[in-house]
Image 1 (spheres, rainbow, N blue to C red):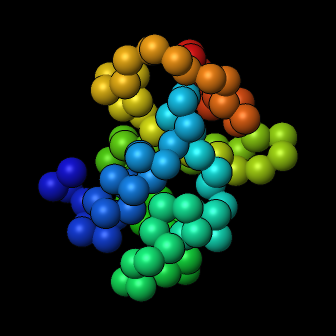
Image 2 (tube, rainbow, N blue to C red; image 1 turned 90 degrees about the vertical axis):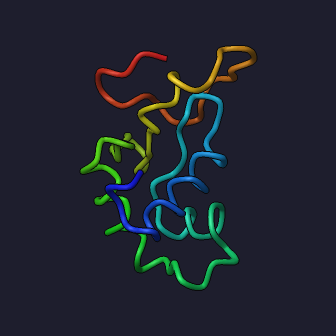
Image 3 (spheres, rainbow, N blue to C red; image 1 turned 90 degrees about the horizontal axis):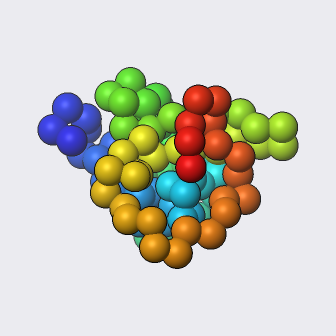
Length: 99
């Protein structure tokens, strides 16, 4: 995490804890702002697209399009989480990802 800005690191941590059981969440900046950091005025919804690019460039997450919307996959999800009660995600996996 030392390779990203403080804003990006903060957003990543908050997105991680708000991901579903498969490590996915919506990729819409409005939804990310509302869900992950509603009370952080230093991270605006306008900042989020560039912060996502910064995190994706470091291999921490993948932003991808589904048939209905944009979604995010946290790439280290199964390295940290243990499969105990994983419910299916409302978002399909990104290409090449195995749940």
